[in-house]
Length: 110
Image (cartoon, rainbow, N blue to C red; front, side):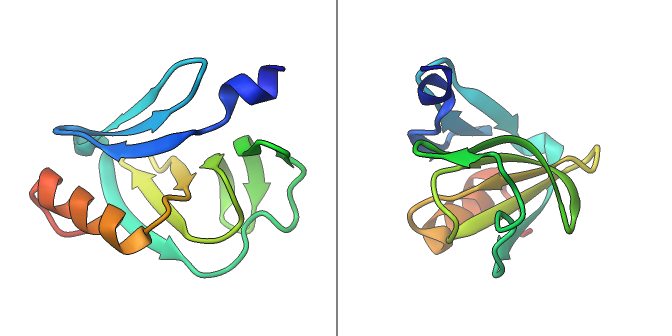
């Protein structure tokens, strides 16, 4: 039951933050904390055991180091790098729209 509550249900680009919507409570990542946005073209989750029926979430050790996942699947990944070098993985339905919206609302290119 706990994993069901932590699963991401939606990703939103708000006026000043990226919002990961979850039944247990939303996670907000302020634009001011994000220094880089990238598409991920390889499967970061193939060596992790953090996944299940409701997605992939939590911290995991990967090829890139420790990453916080808020993912619903293993493709269409977007990587946010924060100014403290924390890496966050999201899986919006449309990577291009998500990144364009983030760039437009944050007022900068990543």
